[in-house]
Each structure stands twice: as C-alpha cells, then as structure tokens.
Image (cartoon, rainbow, N blue to C red; front, side):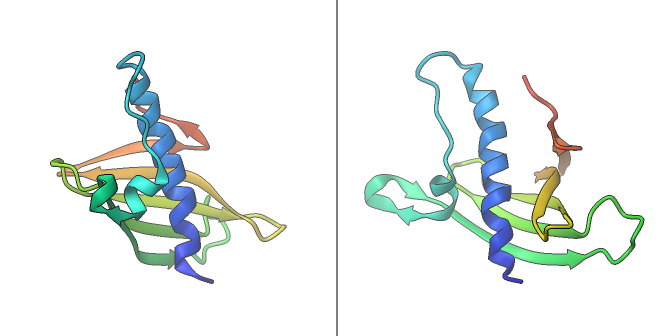
Length: 122
C-alpha cells in the first residue's frame, strides 16, 4: 500500500469543496485544482506542497472506516497550510472510498465530507 495513493482523492475532494465556496463569489471566481497543492513552479505562480504524514489502520470490524490518512497541504498563499484528515473504507472489491474528510486549519476542525456528503457549504 502506497500512502501517496490517498493523496489525490483527498485533494480532489478538498478542491471540489473549496470550489463550492468560490462559486458564491460569482462569475470569474477562482477555481482550485489539485495541481495548485502538488506543484511548485514559480514561473506559473504555483507554490503548492502536499504530503501524506500518516496512514493509520483501524483494525476494528465494527468501525465505519478502515484507514485514517493525515495530509498536510498548502498552495503557498498567505493563509498557510492545513491538515486534511481523510477517513477511508475499503470495499469488498478492494477499493478505498473516502467517506469523511476533516479540515484542520488554525485551531479549528471542520467537517468537509461526512457520510459521503459535503458539509459546511455556503
């Protein structure tokens, strides 16, 4: 199991959630992409960095998830980075499904995804 395999689904979900917020800004709003968090290219204005800091198995058969994945991500803006905590369930077909996602920013924790549904939308 490669921990980086969990990076893209978490960032994809996070960008989708952020884009729901920026849509409220109206036409011409900023659109977040995975590349914004994973690529550093000053010539293109990209200063992203994202890394999986831990993958924690949850061995309980009664648990709603099988793995907890912690990612630190930044797009290089003034707001700084955030921790993204993803909860994955492994299906019978051996697919990992992101079932919940929490954003840790400053001193707050905020559900972004819970039971497969976006939370805290505008």
